[in-house]
Picture 1 (cartoon, rainbow, N blue to C red):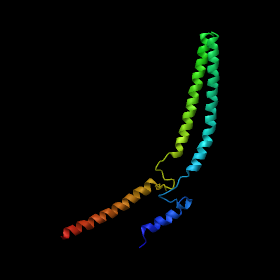
Picture 2 (picture 1 turned 120 degrees about the horizontal axis):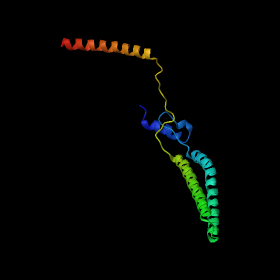
Picture 3 (picture 1 turned 135 degrees about the vertical axis):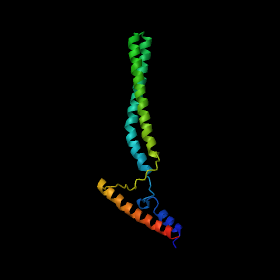
Picture 4 (picture 1 turned 60 degrees about the vertical axis):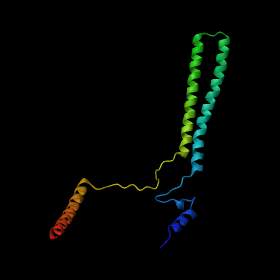
Length: 150
């Protein structure tokens, strides 16, 4: 009899390679997932950073307008623009954080799973049920006969 440790040893030797992946076990390449996520995140964070820089510039402009006693309409419009840019920057940062979180998103989803589909037509399914019904009827008849003998 072959020891279970033999199979573990075989698998352990293949660890880190695609050969170790099987129907019930698989590996995840976190380095490549992280690299891909970083490639997606970089432009988003760059855009968020640019928006934050604009917000700083607009806030400086807002300070100058307040000192110059600008109209309330101008100040309100500028405050609204600042708030909108800040909101957009926060949304972009949240989007980047969500992408980054997917790198370590562990779900028990086997990528090697084999999907099974019943491609039979309804008529074929009915025929199968009838055949199995006959088998069950015969088995019940035999059981009844055995019980009657006792």
